[in-house]
Image 1 (cartoon, rainbow over the protein chains, first blue to last red):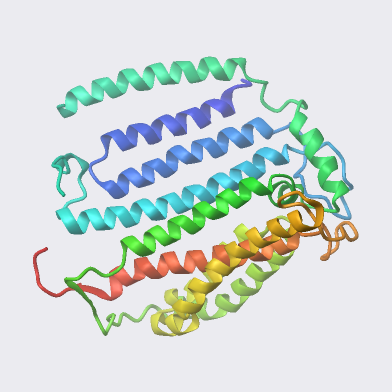
Image 2 (cartoon, helix red, strand yellow):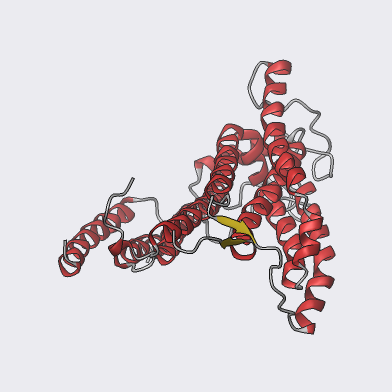
Length: 115
Length: 247
């Protein structure tokens, strides 16, 4: 099963999307978005993986060599995590304001356009 | 659109998207093979610049402009949260946040682990070019260490330990330091974010040129950013109370 790890990533993205679509609470929807984003971490790390390879950090016991997992996708995953965390904070702040303004955080009840 | 109909549309969409994903995965390079062209270029480039942690080198030396963008997203979202969560006109600050004394064991945990966590955070930030870690990870650990005081039930002492004007300035200073190092690269070599310092000896604290400086700047910005974000959310719980009743 060489595509198993990729399928885990795809499943996380899809499950997150299903969760957002079925959500009855904005905070729940935001957590679902985080789950969908964690699918992208799994995909990036799965692309960079090599069987039996070590972490791309060298020291006195591991001299620099090319038998390591791909550091570029790991760096991109780090970027991804930071962006995901900041977006979550921003969305939660918006959810707090929606809750205050409308008295509900159920997306189905937030259908009216108000100025 | 009714809920039932929406779920049917969702089901069709998920099935189609899932099928396309699996087809794409089947055509991708197989999982776990030794074919990694980016790795083969990034590792020698990192070693040539004296950075033992290749990921730090990729983030702050080879792909510095991407990290500047990431840093700007962090900065922008902190500003946006601060703007969204400022007290409204019909809200006022509650003086007493209410006292709920946590368990003795929890308080002990907070007091003992706060200094330890802060030291680990500083260690992660300054050794980012040598060991796993760096500004982003270390910054989050630093902010977590400070909030262990809240876990210990000392919200007031935590507030005193993080004077908000200072934290807001250090958030901006960390981000500005990143950009300033980038412009220093232009001044010295003509390339934005170029590594302008001596590379030092491989695996030592002072190695990898500007990477440790970037780590410290990012660590400052991330720690302050997390503190500001959490402070704004805390304010909502502890201090903001509706004065007039209905909104």
